[in-house]
Image (cartoon, rainbow, N blue to C red; front, side):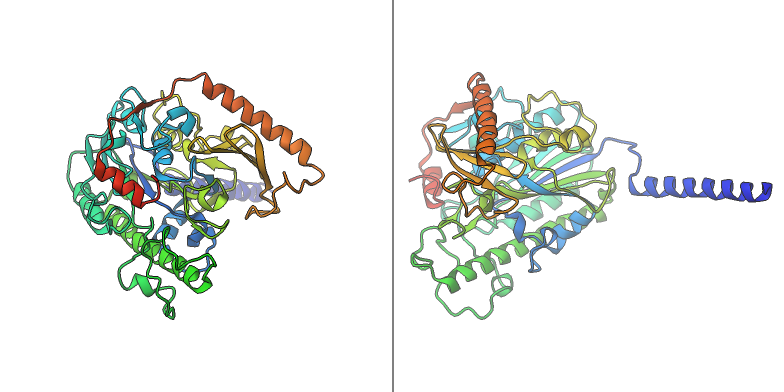
Length: 452
């Protein structure tokens, strides 16, 4: 009996040792401040990624990243277009609060940003961006030691037609190879998924080789080829070209991940990958983005890969891109002093139902409470409501066709919306009106459908 007891104790001791060894191997101890990389892929719908159960092989490298970390299955952008969403990523504030709601505004110098917070805590900071909206023109350079925007879209191509990933990736890897910058915060903005959809070969024909029509991916939001009436074959081809763009950008993400491994940086680097908004393919009668606040343009990926956190985990709690600054600061153990409207999604307290907001200019605002979503107009009227559990594509407006629980749902949505707007109106936002727009920038924004 005594021998049997000793054997049981020995087995328990070995099991404890094994578990500790497993955990220490899975989540290594920090012996220095981790590096941080924030990757934003412009216009990327979550539902076109393999790790979000898309049926086409668009994202092998992003999927690899997801397997190495935590995948948040329900992340919402703060707006359905580039400028306000990216300011939210950097400040943790919704558009009404940061104030950069259209191209007439930029972030004021007094604003607190993620880069400034990390720099004040001893981080080297660098950004490599592309596209005409995530630039120093709008204040995105605040807090960065290096802000490389030479790969941003050119006037000649008017933004939509640029192919920027190769130059961007080469510059990033060259910077990673330079010594003496640890710990670092690196912000990367990939533009090429954004329309126009013109991936280079072989990516252009990767997902729709048999198409024989005339649409080639150019002038996506202005072309008459896609309708009305809708040309189903051309629309399917547009999605195939979008998927080709995604696979093209995914290839460059893979080059960066490989470089991190080769340079032995992956062992102490936290990576967060996300997007600013999605794109529509006639989901609600529209093409592109920045026209409404439906899930097709708001639901974005959020992946956190870290050697200090569990791997292969999925979390379904609704999150927002305003959570990014608090989450990244939490991931590296920096106490945040940013007055954020988000929360660290690594904290247990964040895994509870809370309202998630989105905004489009001053025209529309949306509120989500769990699966219930309401869209309000500029007069603060609830004009649309959806149950995302039973109607994820938002085709059945409960304001027009209420169900038995609609009255209670509408009351809760209105309460959260009113409380939020009352709070926002009491704040001074972080925007300042820019000087007269340079004609080059104005022309780019018009070609992209952001100015009329």
